[in-house]
Amino acid sequence: MQPKPFFMQNQFKEAAMLERSRQTVLNSADWLTVAQIAERTGSNQASLHELFGQWVRERRIFTICRDDVDYFPGYGLDAGAGWQPFKGLRTVLEVFGDARDGWGLAYWFLSANSFLEWE
Image (cartoon, rainbow, N blue to C red):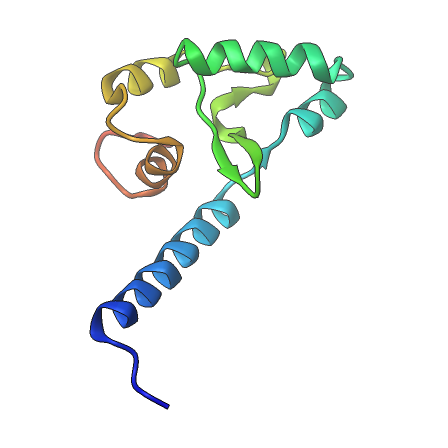
């Protein structure tokens, strides 16, 4: 058996690192599908899907996609206010604009930084 070329070895390592980091994100918080939110709120899943899609476009919330399923960060939703996105989240998402995708945003929120006060 021939050894794998160096660049292929690096690609495999990078893929493994990416998978580990994504798993860390998924394990770090409550990530909810529209179906789960509909179940918790007793709402119609189709109308919630449309509403959450609008919120994503308005940068009020973000998603990560895993296996063709969108997940919303539970920490971004205020259960006491009918599962509306927290208002402060929009400010952060607008600052990032298109510079980060959902996974990039999730990594940022997971990381320890002085911009977040979780008190």
